[in-house]
Image (tube, rainbow, N blue to C red; front, side, top):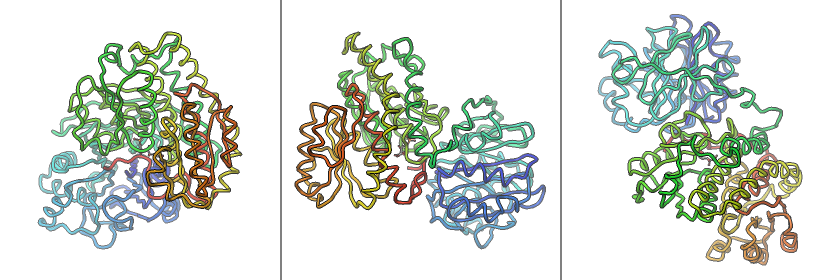
Length: 622
Ligand code: F6R
């Protein structure tokens, strides 16, 4: 977690750094800080707790901090509480206080990631006379760099590579050295970091939107590599200190795509971008009436040789896996397991070269998903990443990659990336069914035609959003909400429930409708809201019965079903209809009213929709 930025050039650095941090706040927002150097002078460090605007106020939007070279950080606490003393940047000097002001230090740094052996390293440094002011692992790394810098006196790159050999864990580091004004040194392992160059300036950031306004020319620094960055130039080194050449990549996507575009919140904008995200993803996969998986490197022979699919992911991406399980099993007749990445990585799940492990991730940086991918590769499985962020760690490390084309997703709660993942998995299932001969040519063509109607059907649901807005105002004071469904509807309920609780802070649970009576139904009391998802015709009556069991215990009922099931109105107090589609693909439609309900409930409660408390967009810690 956390976001880091850096700038060196001819302009005043602080306003540029603050602007970059504003675009990275989704990575964490409990405190922030800057370190800026004015020529040869010592670095000036300024920190503030809370959201970024506190830091901006403190520095007069950056204007009060002179200097054309600097680094910045927005934090999501891992080691140490969110306080001034733990906020980054951290310094190598033995200072008292929080390490801010003009600090007598040879090294100043910011860090994203976790140093696992920081206690042991801290012991070593204490032994060598270092004094610590914070509880962070970052202060330990900065001081360790300082230790090697002074001990071997060969320069920053050498000090950093020696440190990299000693630390365990993940990091993206940006460091400034007192003896090297105008330069920033960086290193990464398993945490994202990019370096952009322009005419007379260079930029560092955890993610592309932070620098897109200034440059589109970007280096993706590799794992265990070091960068030496000066205005308009970047050099890269491996762990031996040997220079390595990296390709310069041109970012082609639009900067406006990362802005709010007139919507009140990024989440609402991204909900409305779903037709485009789904269409673009489908268009990249369906060509001339066929799903083409050759870009992802999946051949028909590979698909035929499979005996098992394991889908591994976290959070909403795991919910996509849950939905895809029903579709893959039913269409391609393959056994499918869906695993939480944080569990999978520590289990001894038997895998063979005939197992396809599909890792689904928007960011491509989720630590547990990345670790699960590595475990799957070690155990000899074939791996496929379904990823949104191009060049991300999961995309780079998987055997095969299928990119979703949702564009940058800024709101912490995922919507358009979820929908893009879902459609990609549906297309994959349809193609696997065709290749494995479990569906006829006619059925295959019909399903592809149906998939292509999904974007327009989502658009039609969005046109009805005022009904959800009205209903959300009625449930704004709810204490508990239960989402229930069977089969694919259970997978949809999982996502509906997560959308509700993560942004509205109303307790909510998703339950397989038939399971309620085995314990949870005791929680249902007068006016408890129960939301039933009923899109599977074979299971419709059964879920209605389960909803009625709740109603007879006082529950207030909402139902989401497909057009035509008007009899649901006899049981439910509020019903939402979605257009008809092939029942395998219905999750793409049924989730939309549930996203809108979560969104409007959060807005009605006056909450920070795009940045819910305690969360960060990209979970790069275990
Ligand atoms: C919820 C949400 C999270 C993510 C999860 C995985 O709205 O966004 O549950 O789905 O943290 O993230 P990625 O897909 O980046 O691996």
